[in-house]
Image (cartoon, rainbow, N blue to C red; front, side):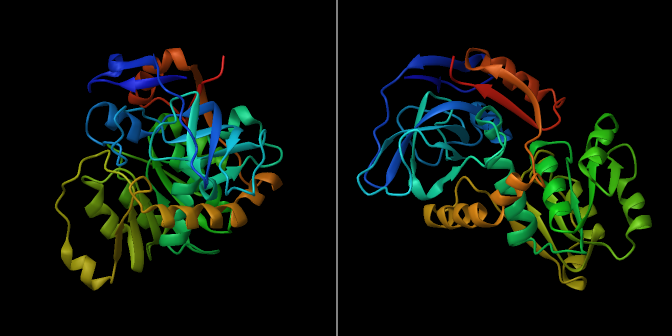
Length: 326
């Protein structure tokens, strides 16, 4: 099969396409013929050598999500048949024509969602739902704050908050504000150099109940001031840096819960449980139209380097998809 292989780390030019051996499914696995994959910030970090694949494979193939059809089934798999349209997350290996995955981690493509759009769903909607609802405790009537509201995780977070009846504020650059409002954001706050914290406190003086932060850095201290008493901050990424001074007094005084999380390195059983719960609770919302993938652009697999350059320009609103099949 054809796959994007990392033989060295560096800029987008190190992404090369090679012929590698086809993967073979084990008894509880399925082999997916990948039609489409998508970019995530973790992919660019992995390419640079800063976020290695935890599986430790001899051939390093990036890619955390896929959409395609079932090509082969392990002996113990009963819930899928060859030809089923599926999507899902993996710890790596999805920049390829085929991927092997545990059958309990596989999601069916919802009715009404085209296969070519489905790769925009798994990673960002699972991440946003897990951070806001499962770990962040967001419920109807409460306020959430999501940083980088026009990102893949941000656009998913806006929709999830509105679907469960919560209110949501987002930060973003000024050029992406209208896109966030169109998705339903109740309050759109321009990031630096604007004073997003002051604007938020003027609208939500008691503070927000849940914060999903992919930025880190200096936003950490502002998050402490933006969060409500007994609120939860879920740290999903560190685009702004991994170190920053914070007012630890606020952590105690407000009884803040500050959670660090990743999907990629989570133990398999926990990922399987999360995917099963997501299938029952969230996939019906795609079929009803309450949730929908937000797609910024598409690239061919042969143009994977250009796709990475586009992501690193920070110009995208929503997901950058890669068409693997010809």
